[in-house]
Length: 183
Image (cartoon, rainbow, N blue to C red; front, side):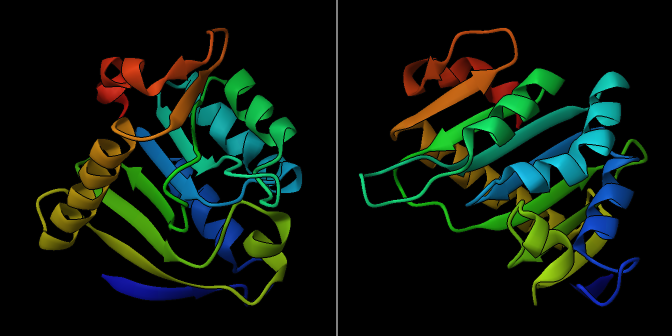
């Protein structure tokens, strides 16, 4: 099933869809060019609960390519890592994808693909539009999403990225292959 998500009201917005799916997911992958403190603050309760019940949470966001480029806020990254999420800081190539992927224990998935980064504005205030896809892990749309995630993983493993884990030193791309099970 495919539907559109936009920030229609206080109760019907990107935040409500993301938290609704995350509350049930066993695996969560968030790909967002920008992650800001206020956005993580809104998602922290549901992501923390997901991690406590054993869900895997992987987040990818932009790092700084050069002195002119803004990057995700370090406080937001630290908060995610302190909860037990894995964060991949992508420096090259520039990461513009906005994908919120949720794999459920009943062999179904949900994905939001659109314009919403992990910022307060994008989650509840801005004019953002995403396509929400719901389906079985066996359907064609899921196959395409998994292909993209595999493509992204392979591309990033050859590029300039770092991986941040709670309670662990920062890892370089050379050690990334050891983490493939989180995908």
